[in-house]
Length: 155
Image (cartoon, rainbow, N blue to C red; front, side, top):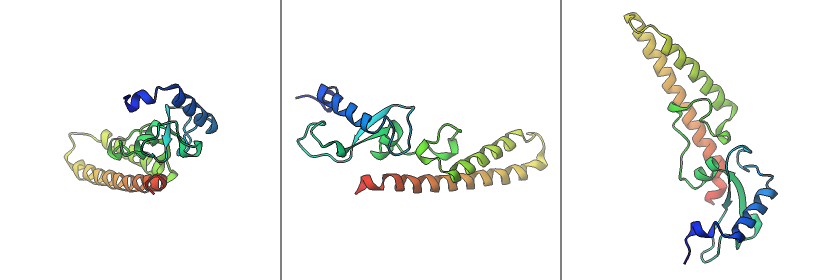
């Protein structure tokens, strides 16, 4: 008996996978990514079927991030540690990008504050509180977007 990983190396799966990716123009159908590794996702599984024994409309091309998030193997990264390039494309709504850029500016401002000036402590604490509020907003927006993007998979 072969493992699922073995089955994914089978020529019939490889042909099916290529057909799906060609149909989808080698583009993630969730976020539009064409630059990172792509996966072919089964929308549903039927017990006893081989991975390639489905109609093509049961498959969709997803980038690795969308595929992992869709299977809940990975959650979007914690916004408190995001850099410009850490937000998956599918979560980069204009509002998230604007908030994230504001957060980066505030982090730079906080980092540039003199360390030995005692009267700036209160200002630094206020800036830190603003950054934490931005993090909460970003987290809420990403979670809402994740639910919107992957709601169909949970049906």
